[in-house]
Image (cartoon, rainbow over all chains, first blue to last red):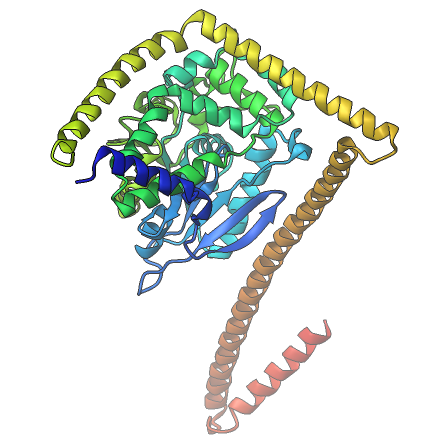
Length: 339
Length: 163
């Protein structure tokens, strides 16, 4: 048993080595099969001894973080779990937008980039795909699938649909206190560091708990590595293309339009065409985490009220990011894939 | 020291949890209060405005010095992105055309197979007719019966090719 002083000294020594900077994340072998602007389509082939065992999946990751959260470390990777079970994965990494991308609209992302990424993935796979969306990547995927027949079926992981059920984030993202127009006009792209700060202040106690957690488990090398990997991923925030963010916040957080249908007042018109999730006819599965403070289960499972096809839901134990690191997402997705 | 440390560790952990609980309750009140929300919005607007002013000032200075500014680079990269978009649109069209060609090729092949089958069937029918004719005329059907049919087939193929 370490003394308080030993523990504190060990923690300080560990942090002085800058562990997050030295660690490499996203190391599961894969290849880039297509690029458009900053976006990249990454192909993770099946590593099952008998090759491909299931239909390939197309994964739409969130725009506000790096994709490596699903591939943190060997043994802590959704990608590794899926590919070793014989599921080839095509992962859409939206990339890091530059100032030149501030005029990129949500319509461009949903009706152009996603269409092309699906097309190239399908051509590469030589067969139809299943789709998976995580967090806001899932929201955009839902809008896309309501307008294009790109996948056979879809699973949404911690994907916000009812934005007014998003807890504290819904309280903060109101027109009266969130000047999104002024922010985009000034910043251009919405800064990733502001999004990261907002997320960390959703649960202020989490900021101290992070350090106390490390201090308490400093003797556990596996915990230390995971802590450093999450720290590395979390500090590497990504800007959100300005015009796309403006539309996303207004239509989703301010007006909560994903619950509206054609004929309802205030339906979302994206590039002149209404967004109506009722138009999506494929089977959907919603996975939510019970301690998710970013997308609570109510915000995610609202999919069942608005999706046009059959919907099943599952609530797992854990938090928004923790379920990626502790194998819960992999397990839930593999259950869905094997159905 | 080491004998008492585990207890101290436990105590510090308990103290931390109590402190955390109290702080969380306090933050819950602060973070959703109208004053905080209003301040947060004003701070964000202020930061965004400051950023825009700074970038404008830097751009103006660079322009006065006749050095390419951030705006110029953004313009250039936008042009490059638009060019990439056009190229990708062309690639999309080529892929669609390639799909259509492949589909047509498949259809043509199917049609050729069907017509070849039809020709074989017709040839067999002709051979059968010839055999019956020969039988009616009292000739031996063997050997001679297939030759005229083959000659007719060759003649028909020649006509089709010239057409």
